[in-house]
Structure formats: structure tokens, C-alpha cells
Amino acid sequence: MKNAVVTGGGSGIGAAIAARLRADGLNVAVLDLQQSDDEFAHVADVTDRAAVDTALNAVRAQLGPISVLVNAAGLDCFKRFTDVSFDKWQQIIDVNLNGVFHCVQAVLPDMLEAGWGRIVNISSS
Image (spheres, rainbow, N blue to C red):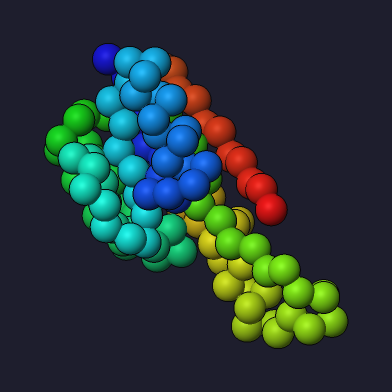
């Protein structure tokens, strides 16, 4: 059985993706800022590489190597661009881009060793 991780999987689109992957027969762990009752839920901020590594190591201990990653964690800002502070802009970039970098880099060794893997990066607003 393949093991998947969905970032932002505690709610919204991420939760729907996690449910669909489970329905398709995958073991699914979710990473989110909020704790959930899901058996394989882990609290992690995708902008914090140490937190990502800790969570993914816990997933590996529970399920084994990770073969599917869906990066669904993301931030948006529904303001006029001229009203967005640089700090808010930096936070959005950190989650939406750097978070993807951290998660992909952290799971890639599992996929390379297995000779198979899938990574899906999504966004919405």
C-alpha cells in the first residue's frame, strides 16, 4: 500500500484530497497547523524545516516510506496589492513557496529510493 502526505490536510481542499486518497486505498497522513482527530494527523508549520522533518519522521515510523506528497497548505491575502504589507507578503511566500520546498526536499529521498513517487502542488483562492 502506498503512503501519502497531504499538507494543509486538516480542513478545506486538503481534507477533501486526504479523504479521496484514503478512498482510493492509500494510507494518508496529514500535516496542518491545527491538531485533528485523524489517526495520522501531525501538527507542523511547513515554513519550519525542523518541524516538517519531525512530522515526516513520525509518519515514516507509523506508515513507512512516503510515496505521494500533496502540497495543499497555503495562504492568501484578499486585499488590494497596495494595502499588503511586506511582512504579510513574506508570510505568504514562506508558506506557499518555501513550505513546498521543505516538504518536497524532505520526502524526495523516499521516492528516489523506491524508484517511484508522485508530488502534486496545488493552490486556490
